[in-house]
Image (cartoon, rainbow, N blue to C red; front, top):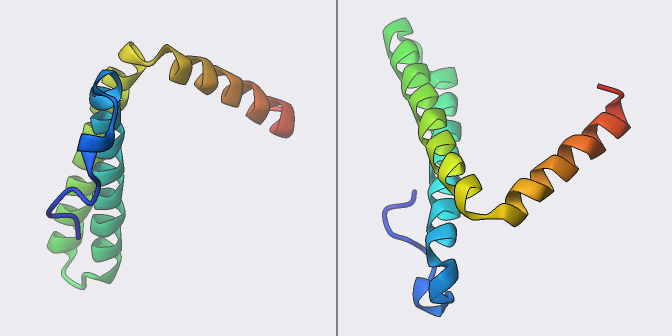
Length: 94
């Protein structure tokens, strides 16, 4: 589990630091989503299962908050997201 940051951010260029922190925040939140969904799948108590799934949903919101901020500050990421959407449409027809 992530209780400390397993990365030396001192090595990151100062101008890139906030974006790297946002990306790391997204990773941590998505890791938490996976953890809570796995725990919900294992839970036998229906109330506990509901709570785990509710918390997982909240973690998805947190990941989205970090992503929203990242997309404000990293224009290359915005461009690459648009490129990815086009590739998926080309591959799937949707």
